[in-house]
Image (cartoon, rainbow, N blue to C red):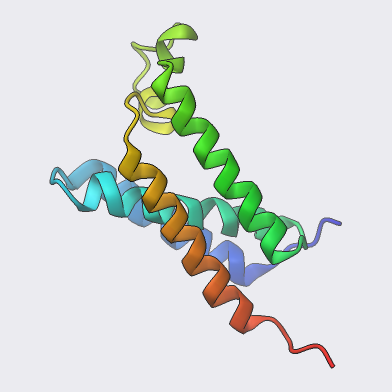
Length: 125
């Protein structure tokens, strides 16, 4: 059921700004390739939760599986298959190279989401 949740949207916007800063200015071996991937799953989760009141675990697993799918598509060079190899936006958003460490970053990011969001949920009696 759609329902706007400002808290998640604010977190989404903050994470989006951080991701843009990382993409533009971080050219290292940790922040851009690992921390950016760690944050992107949290960003996607917060975007979904901004508009839909979906269960935590279902949303988190869905985002994780989506992220894994994108990474597998990178392995098969989906950007080139779609003819988008000369489109910078597609190269940045979809990505162009498969990395096993990205799967770890996604998993850790979703793990943090579950840990933090679970503690925000009201206790059921």
